[in-house]
Amino acid sequence: MIHKGWENRETIKQITCVHADAKKFIVDRKLTPGKVYDVKNETEEFYFIIDNSERIAGFRKDYFEEN
Image (cartoon, rainbow, N blue to C red; front, side):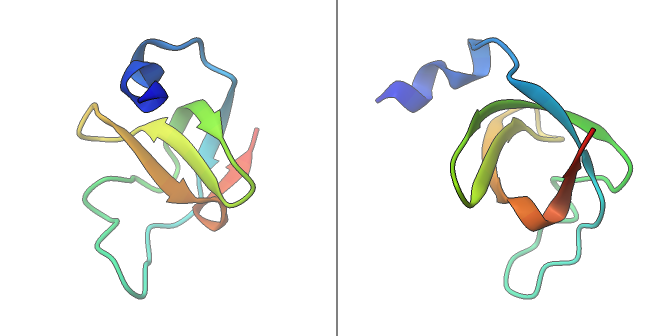
Protein backbone atom coordinates (compact mmCIF):
# COMPACT_ATOMS: atom_id res chain seq x y z
CA MET A 1 0.00 0.00 0.00
CA ILE A 2 3.00 2.25 -0.55
CA HIS A 3 1.13 4.00 -3.38
CA LYS A 4 -1.20 5.72 -0.91
CA GLY A 5 1.59 8.07 0.21
CA TRP A 6 2.90 8.97 -3.25
CA GLU A 7 0.92 12.22 -3.49
CA ASN A 8 2.85 13.58 -0.50
CA ARG A 9 6.26 12.29 -1.61
CA GLU A 10 9.09 14.53 -2.66
CA THR A 11 9.24 15.22 -6.39
CA ILE A 12 11.90 13.10 -8.16
CA LYS A 13 12.07 15.20 -11.33
CA GLN A 14 9.91 17.17 -13.72
CA ILE A 15 8.73 16.05 -17.15
CA THR A 16 6.85 17.73 -19.99
CA CYS A 17 3.85 16.16 -21.70
CA VAL A 18 4.48 15.95 -25.46
CA HIS A 19 1.12 14.49 -26.53
CA ALA A 20 -2.14 13.09 -25.17
CA ASP A 21 -3.11 10.93 -28.14
CA ALA A 22 -3.85 7.47 -26.80
CA LYS A 23 -5.02 4.58 -28.95
CA LYS A 24 -6.73 2.61 -26.21
CA PHE A 25 -7.49 5.00 -23.33
CA ILE A 26 -8.82 8.53 -22.90
CA VAL A 27 -5.81 10.47 -21.71
CA ASP A 28 -6.54 13.96 -23.03
CA ARG A 29 -8.74 14.69 -20.00
CA LYS A 30 -5.89 13.99 -17.59
CA LEU A 31 -2.84 15.33 -19.50
CA THR A 32 -2.19 18.63 -21.24
CA PRO A 33 0.50 18.72 -23.95
CA GLY A 34 3.17 21.28 -23.07
CA LYS A 35 2.42 21.20 -19.34
CA VAL A 36 5.17 20.28 -16.86
CA TYR A 37 4.33 17.57 -14.33
CA ASP A 38 6.09 16.47 -11.13
CA VAL A 39 7.19 12.83 -11.06
CA LYS A 40 6.46 11.16 -7.72
CA ASN A 41 7.56 7.63 -8.68
CA GLU A 42 8.95 5.90 -11.76
CA THR A 43 9.18 2.37 -13.14
CA GLU A 44 10.67 1.04 -16.36
CA GLU A 45 7.48 1.76 -18.33
CA PHE A 46 5.53 4.34 -16.31
CA TYR A 47 5.77 7.74 -14.64
CA PHE A 48 3.51 8.31 -11.65
CA ILE A 49 2.51 11.97 -11.59
CA ILE A 50 -0.08 14.33 -10.19
CA ASP A 51 -2.34 14.71 -13.24
CA ASN A 52 -4.92 17.40 -14.13
CA SER A 53 -7.42 15.92 -11.67
CA GLU A 54 -4.89 16.60 -8.84
CA ARG A 55 -4.64 12.85 -8.14
CA ILE A 56 -1.72 10.47 -8.54
CA ALA A 57 -1.83 8.46 -11.77
CA GLY A 58 0.51 6.30 -13.83
CA PHE A 59 1.14 7.06 -17.50
CA ARG A 60 3.37 5.41 -20.09
CA LYS A 61 6.67 7.19 -20.61
CA ASP A 62 6.02 7.82 -24.30
CA TYR A 63 3.64 10.69 -23.42
CA PHE A 64 6.50 12.69 -21.90
CA GLU A 65 10.01 14.00 -22.36
CA GLU A 66 12.42 14.74 -19.54
CA ASN A 67 13.36 18.37 -18.90
